[in-house]
Image 1 (cartoon, rainbow, N blue to C red):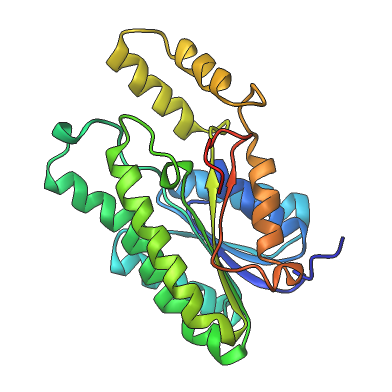
Image 2: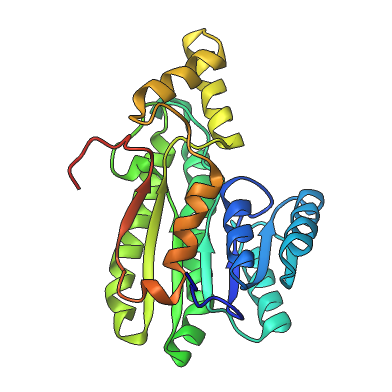
Length: 263
């Protein structure tokens, strides 16, 4: 299936590892040109080299902290300088720390807001005018299954990712006539460092081994296994494509059936 992504320009946030890295790889394989960003220069450069070598795509790597205005401006200006415009935006951020309500003061909440909500809002603000002028764009937010079924001990993620969902759902209506789609992808328990960290946090809280927590996750999933990043990335590539031009305002889970709700 030709997804119509050859020559499109994409920004993929938090792309040095995990889900962002997998999405960047998938888009590059479909012929997109990339600007990838993350905080750490060394792992980001490694990801850039691997993606470019394996796909032949043009890939620019920009080390930036997307919880800051300066970091957002650096990434978007680099994309404009390298390619002239942005067609696809994938917002993504490492999850806020685990813990119950009492363990997080307001500074922790503010950091979570800046990292997860502000980065999505301000990246969108920066690329949206160009998408509107060209009458084509794809905005994809990586959120979490927690927006449909909260997970214990993740009050920051449950709350702030829900705010991203409300933002995206409202924006989708505002830009629908401009040829721009806005969707959220909800990863379930996927084989990433984030899930390993969550298992370690829960294990420490309960006084058990992390392997026991991971096994519990797998028992809760109807498929009885963790997802693989490439399985998640396949949906991202489709939603970014020409084929998905009539899909907008959706929050789609990639969770092996974990969410128990009907919708």
